[in-house]
Amino acid sequence: MAFTAQDVKNLRETTGVGMMDCKKALEASDGDFDKAIDWLREKGLAAAQKKAGRIAAEGVAYAEVIDNVGVVVEVNAETDFVAKNDKFIDFVKGVAKAVADSNPADVEALLAAKFPGSDKTVAEQQSEMVLVIGENINTRRFARYTPGVNVPYIHAGGKIGVMVNLEVDGIANDAAITELGKDLAMQIAAMRPTYLDTSAVDPAELEKEKEIQLALALEEGKSKNLPEDKALEIAQKKVAGRINKFYEDICLLNQPYVKENKVSVGKHVEQVAKDLGGKIVVKAFTRFEKGEGIEKKQEDFAAEIASLVK
Image (cartoon, rainbow, N blue to C red):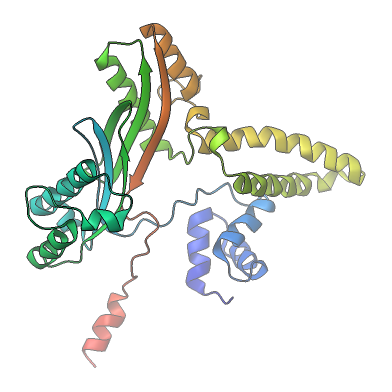
């Protein structure tokens, strides 16, 4: 797979590694971007990168509890100006209400559902919004929670939308539960956990991380000129410790709690439940960041202007 100078630049911006090493990584990886990151990590040149995707598309990530149903949605538009448009925001809220009312199985079912306060479907209302606003609009994804206590959080006017789902038993202090949920949601927004806990981690992802860390540990030990079996033994011990750090990065309940980083999020939740005299279990969460994983067309304005004046 061929690669370009822009690919080298993108890899450098993503990893913070020098241009020449980025070029070598892409050469060794046949131009595959993710494999190049892994190659750099195995050589000890790059820290772990969360594969969140490039944030490029505009729109809104929105979270709300509607009739005790927790809903988080992402609706995309072409520019950030539209994301601030009141009509667009009303449409996003309508989409969230449709999710709460209709309990759709997927986005296709959501688009076919009735848009609240209208005789149109969500898809028909979306098409009308395109005509009114003059930009393409796309209802991209949603999550819906019903049992338990749902706590929403919207960051930076819709850049990030989070929903936290809690199971609560024996606690009547709603304000304290809401405060805990909000703190957890802010943690999720800031620290970007991928999984709830270690049991939820994809086994394939875990094995890949172990392989990367073993290769890195062996690379680090080369200068000691140890016998092969001894070098492998030492490297494997290093991997065991580093996997705990891997869990801290990607699992919410294992992350250091941002307001008091001497304890994990899981331990903090346990302490709050104990103080309130009941039981609290974090059951699930969803974090949507607008445009996550969508590549926006890179415009070369100089070339565009040059083509117009030819």
